[in-house]
Image (cartoon, rainbow, N blue to C red; front, side):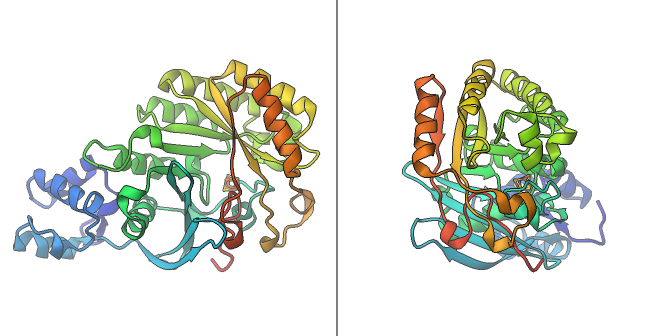
Length: 353
Ligand code: SF4
């Protein structure tokens, strides 16, 4: 590790933290103490870590960083309990996270990149372009700062579904998952953490092989290659078929259900033939479908295909869901949460980055 640069310890897994303490001639057990202060007690000031000696605290103050993001704004939805956080990084980049409460859970949706390179046509983040990957510390810090505001015990689920494609920032995403799921970290159980991807098949398989066993969601949106490519250009590079094979692998290896995210676009993916192929698909892969009403992205002044997309009317969505249920598909209809503060699914973007 570079001794001139301060180490962002919020982004270190316990193994890395142990390595760090050994590298500064300290005992390995110090790593557990600091890991516990940061991740369980939400203490981000070395001087408040009272079981560390004074000498060690002086040494750590010189060598470690505990501020990776600053919480610069909180917006509360008036129509729902949704809460949006705007964070600023040390190099002035802005990212967002959202708390989405429902009857049974409060889910924190976190970001993994500043912007996103994948350009999905229905997504505001895609329209803002790609700036950079977030560090592991910046991914973890969204949770830590939100937990400090909202109450750690009140956040029941985490989804990697904010700004960016998590599997394109694989190493940092994986490290953040290792931190969240470590047995010393009293965050949440693995089955309450979901990673959502547009579909990078090789990385889906690597995640399966990592042994982390978090839940996986694939942004499906159409079962037809040509339509999916139109709204998700990444489908040209990694076809739906390749992704479905990877999902099958993930489900087998982790013994978990895959969630297929399905945003409804009028006359594009809400037809009878879409129902037929969805039924076939869910018969082949242990899975459930999350149907999501399309949240408009007019705040980003969309052009081309993005401007042409329109939401399926709600009564048609209810019929679509009903028909799937009749055919034994497990399907959840997600609420449109937080669109009044542009915090709903697919709406996250910060223009002045
Ligand atoms: S939907 Fe996800 S992968 Fe697609 S552009 Fe938006 S943030 Fe990126």
